[in-house]
Length: 123
Image (tube, rainbow, N blue to C red; front, side):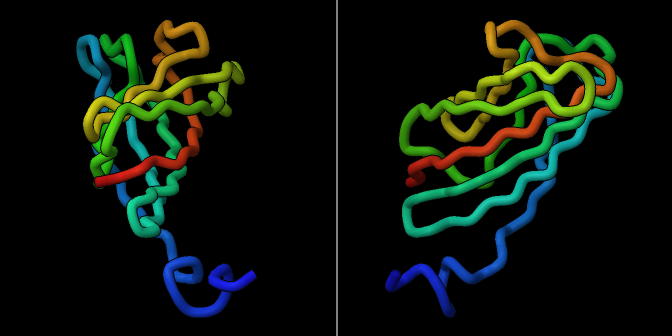
């Protein structure tokens, strides 16, 4: 197919970022995020791995700020991959992405890793 191989945006490397992870209630003791994304015009394709090493008093949603701004609210899914295997959901509010367990309760606990992917229309 034309436009899907060779030089250009499709063949360029993805951008990596390490946004700060917070919780919507109280504070996490130790958490990290590896975000990889590609901007194609007004579309952002991304994958993020969020790891909670030590939850501390953190609860509610896992949150981090995207390095791009969605034009509206977007939502998608993911999975906890290190401990319990729960399905997760994510939603954007402006450039903040929030992650919860499938039933919208907290996924935050020691030793949890959540992997999400998505496509977002950006400004």
